[in-house]
Length: 354
Image 1 (cartoon, rainbow, N blue to C red):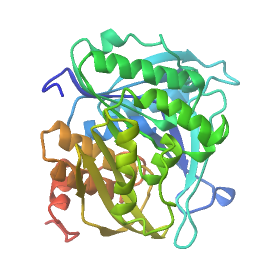
Image 2: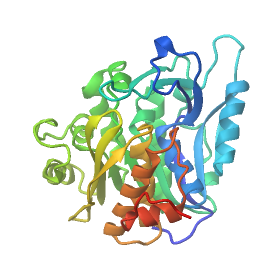
Image 3: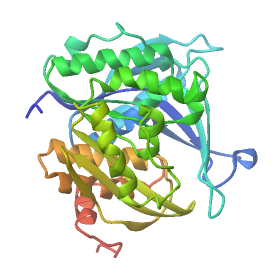
């Protein structure tokens, strides 16, 4: 990858605002916190705020109060925006999408649903961004994901366009499969997902996705996802040969492993396949405050390790540690420091720091 660049990392995706009533179900909620998020944006935000890298986000922005709120949060996280602006008509949009998610508690699982009606980001299309200008002064890593790909026919085409521009500029490219059943079911389900993602992945160096993502996003045959423990790396590694046979240009595949005991107690691990070698992090039990964004937290830490020249094992530990820490904060983006991440990756504890 390029050793330097004006930007270390650029993401292409949709920004959303998430309404979070905490452990209260929405049908009984009286108030909500507002988090700014996006599967692709979260990585850029985490890498800027925690890992002190220079990052950017390529996305849609809308001229109305919700857009102002979102843009202010992007700025606060230290992410450079590359916006296509949309005017809101005061009634129907276009809009910044809304995600609704309560956290659940104990035996009651979290619940997530969406309002992506007339979403500005879904209207993005090839030709909307000046890629030569974005990459002109150097970008080391370019990232997108399956959530943005599922929004419309044109968003998937835009990802492919961005990936090709990134490759031409010498950047590493990554894609988080992030398969979301509810989003893909609107536009053709699993068969449609495989068709769309196939066109994108041929431009990708680094894949993030668990065994279910690989099956449903890439159409890779594998064991039943629930057949073994979700913490068993064999479930993941058994599929990698098939992934590489189908996509021999792929250099790295990584994912988290999570066993859910309750909404608040998970066992957490991570694995990566790097150039033919298998790597697995240790597992630990987590007390969950807010699980949303944990996977993006892992990807961010893992990408940071690779960008910083760490060994694959160390990069995996940093991803594992940052993802674990992120679940202890409210919201989708990090509140951790790099020092906290490195300490936990080395086996740090929750003893008070005086």
